[in-house]
Length: 499
Image (cartoon, rainbow, N blue to C red; front, top):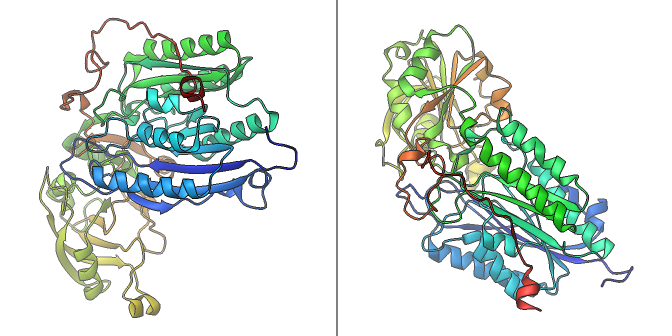
């Protein structure tokens, strides 16, 4: 027990990456120093409530599973930093939940287990997660407190992480420590975020139940995890977790959320109408509404795609209606292509540039596209950057070919177009590598369709070659019998292993 003069010592580490296993590429898990969020700044009340010891954050892009070697190196480096700052009174696992590592069934759960073995089972832990992550049994076991986002798009990400920290500090300050009960329910539903946006039903009403359960006497927090559909392990499914001090209330809350999740399973649908790419282009070209948005769903880097698949772009450039400079304007965001950026810089604004773009690594669906057109914009290089041989990040060019404006040099579906001279609001059509639109685009669109395109996060997940997930699983097995939805009480690691 801490005395009144002592500040609790709290460690932090995490993994923030989602990467599809249905891609041929492999990537290293990149480690970066974890910086504290602004609500933990030294002059904030929460920041002053404890001594904070951030370790490392693992991350990367949607370029296929992480190599086992880089994962192990990241974990080892993180453990060394954590050990250096021991002892701890509490620990914050800052997680996503959709990391895929070669040969590791549950990367986040294993990461948490190894940290727990180092810091000991007396240390109070909190875990904050993305609702499109996997709240596996091992994740639940090593989390005394746990919370997840309640909105998709994730407008509440900051709020959710902060909630997890507030709960942790409250339990430390009150001396109550770990909650007495932690209920875990596996819900055999596996959907993508595009099929479960909380802006529309049924997810809107489903997630509205979460704060109701949280408000029940004896409940501290509650969450619904949709899970990660482009992973392939037993943990890839829906989950409900409720924690608190009243067993009956915790159990009732978990049952309520899990049963509602299952009951509405057949009501989930894409947030906007979904069609094959050619039909989406037909609708956009014929529409009088502008800007008309098209989601290039199959290669959404925010969902685990590589962001460099050229399958869609190749077909857009072949549309005869878009090959004339006077055709309907279409802004395409975005495609990597460093060679094109360099060519654009040499040609200058108004000049002609040509080079291959995209598919430099992920060429499973389409080879690199030869892009040829007029340079509308290219990132400038400052004198300092020239002297150092550096580049701004992101370093982009905008190339116009026909009536298509292609943002090149990044995989971001939300590139910063300020000062480029290209205004998305004035475009007839905007195509972005996203599923559901983030608010930046959602608030701008006059109409919107979701294109069923190819890529590592293909929305036709019923045809994905799963080998390891639990079956039956809805909607892969649409006529499966109703599951029991058993509420399982997860013990604490101290109960199992002692100190």
